[in-house]
Amino acid sequence: MTVIKQHFQQALANIRSSKLRSFLAMLGILVGTAAVVALISIGELATHKALQQFKALGTDLLAISLFQTSTTTKNTSDAKVFSLPEANLMSDTIPTIKAIAPYISLYGNINYETHKINGSIAGVVAELQPVIKIKLSKGRFISPLDRASYYCVVGHDIAQDMKRFSYKSIVGNQILLGNTYFTVVGVAEKWQENTFFNQNVNRLVMIPILTSKVIRKNAQIHNIIMRIKPNINITHLTNDIKAFVSLHSPFLQVFPRSAKQIIESMKQSSQIFTLLLGFIGGISLLVGGIGVMNVMIASVAERHREIGIRMAIGANRKDIQLLFLTESIILALLGGILGVILGISTSLIISYFVGWGYKIFWIPPIIGFGVSAATGVFFGYYPAYRASRLDPIQTLRYD
Image (cartoon, rainbow, N blue to C red; front, side, top):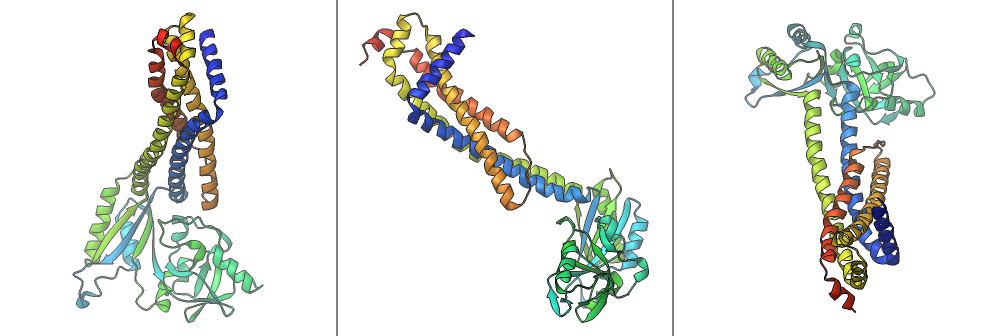
């Protein structure tokens, strides 16, 4: 233990005696470790952010999109329509569906008190609220009793715009959708945007689905989102849905999206992405390791006489090798520690400006620090071995 302590103290003294050269060697390890930690952390943060959106709604979701087949003709226009009664019948027919919410994406101008508001319109059913977890700050949601009434529920951001244009109470007031006035009966709370649902609820005005044709004459159901029972076979369920749609609307194709499948796919993609980023960072670390080896070779060349004197007073080859190896490991570890700090700081800054929020992942720092230590051993071994193999007599004659 005393011998190791002496080697450690001597290595630190040698590093301090050549500060600039040691710093340049350590800089390569620092940049390489920081690149590994930052790139892997950013990849993990991006995946965590994407998965957070899905997990906020739950993993028991299934969305299907309905599109016309290429064989559809004008004479079969009735067959391509998927109606609300058929959607309800599908829920009753397939027992693994807990709740179903068809909706229609509509396009039209939104005006309030002569001011245009940026947003979109959707015809929805009452079941949409529990399916995608919409909470209300005021009023109520669309009800089955509304049927084809001119009522609507506005999203959080739409409501904020309305407040800027008028001091009137939003609930009970009217908003112009296209050419028709609708009475606001509810205001939604801030909703976490999720790509699984095709609309951003915060910028959405929701009307009864049966009133959709007032906004667009050819309005049809092309999207359905549903909650399904847990631990079921998604493939079997999608096959049942396709069979049902094929029976009732044979000219429509079904494109399903399962939250569980998407999450699993994202996790697999994340692993590949993380490995790729780690490989890119590893290249920087490799360059840093070569820098450490060059510095150590130069150090060995300059310290021939010191090596000879140490051997003359009793140091064996193993002691010489351990001395130089300790020095290279210390350089790598110092660079690794500073690199981990820099890498975490970089990922923190990037996540702050992107608006992801920050979460520390322990694996990237551990990997970065561990690889930097391994780099010190790997690239320091050859110079240390070379120093231990020098001829003591030749080193004492070295000028």
